[in-house]
Image 1 (cartoon, rainbow, N blue to C red):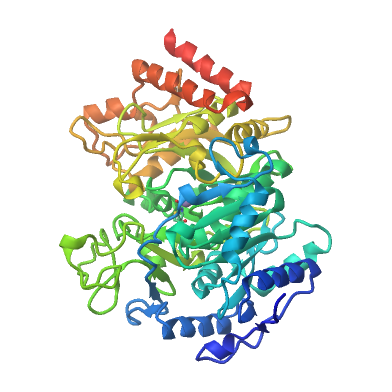
Image 2 (cartoon, rainbow, N blue to C red):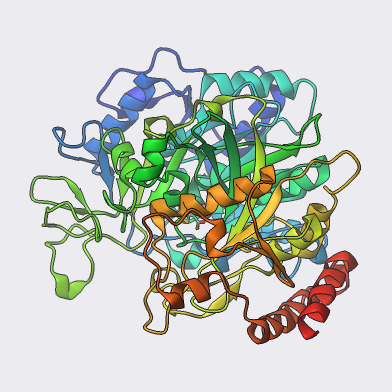
Length: 612
Ligand code: O2Y
Ligand code: MN
């Protein structure tokens, strides 16, 4: 180390007193050694160990308000809430700059960008060298999942961004309790925490990389302060690193929401669902039952909206936790109609990133539909509709999950919730019916492996192009997809009592280009059918692609569907599926010889049925 930075010097920068409960260093030698090594490389002026306290947060927020990183929102309408404007060139995840650095390239697989670990470290360390000079380095101990859960895993993120600290405090269990767990576990195991190193650097897209080292349980991210690039607990740890860890330890780290459906008898079934971005995951996780269902006593409980860690319990069922403690949700399109629970969740104590502002400092975005008008756009310029939207299409809110009216207290259960059904889905204008059930686990894995979605303008710039995104994990699986499918198949062993697997498509269109299914709260009708299938009391017809309900098998009271809608939502189109299965076969072959034979056999079995 070239020099010793001041430890816990937050008070010298902030307008509020230093937090009294800060921890200066750890009792775990391995953690202290890594922090010292990073400080030696990045040469910060000060090191602050985060304890997660309210005092610490207040000091950081005051500091960020003073330097313009955070702007206060209207305290009457949005108490305790802030606006952050990111660099205009730093507004989204950057898949092309995201790498998985395993010793052997084939272990990262064709689904990842790869660099040899030594080269990746060398490149990143060159960027990190001296990058925190004059700045404070924050050490953030965090726990993904309930602090006392055996399913949870810890990490430590080192960053030079106080915005990241404030977001990690909402998105994870961060601070003193996490450090205590890391210290306790660190005495016994070398893998007690994932090491995440982050710097905003110069925010230069040409000097921006997000590198993962699954074999070392390490992450290095440089040059972005935005979302999943910078909040390393989320996509980097809880999906890319955790999926690798899960494979070796016999569990699953998935890009899934977790929702509890309580029927009028008070029985709750938990459903985990994977959808690619822009398919309404947060809306489904926070669904409001249709009026008739509400009258009957149906309730919906939100356990998680994005990530799900599952492992087999003693009874053979899969038990799931949401590793996150907050939501990093897309603001545009969120309204009292599309997601009233989300809107209620973000009324207070939220950080908004890249939204517009009304004249009286309320956050504003396209699709909010609350009667207000924007005065300022996400860049901070006077709003001019000719110059683009007021909010960036990827504008976000960060907020504690507990503020959601449908938040499930079971989200804190250390044992997790038992999963009755796994749902895969995508945005498919044609061919794919509203819902079907996989014949068995192997078929379910194929359904997940083959799933795809049509792109929306917000996501890619190209509209309506079908992209396969297995289990919605394409950007997030930390190892070779072929091995990932083998891992999924391996759960079907003796004593397993696995969930049923379904596929849904809320986005089927009619000949006039309009959606045929009302979606939103009415999706509960489909979830009710799934639970009926799990319990063995809902009907279906068998087809080569799986079990499909007839319209009579769903409760469609109060839903007006045309004949065309009934035909397309509940129909099976043999010739279209023949072409689809040929394409699925080609897709699986693209992963080469590591692709499990059982999955190829399943594809062939269904292709043969379709040919009959
Ligand atoms: O992580 C980001 O920076 C934005 S993308 C995102 C954010 C929250 C949840 N899911 C996603 C996603 O792309 O799946
Ligand atoms: Mn996501």
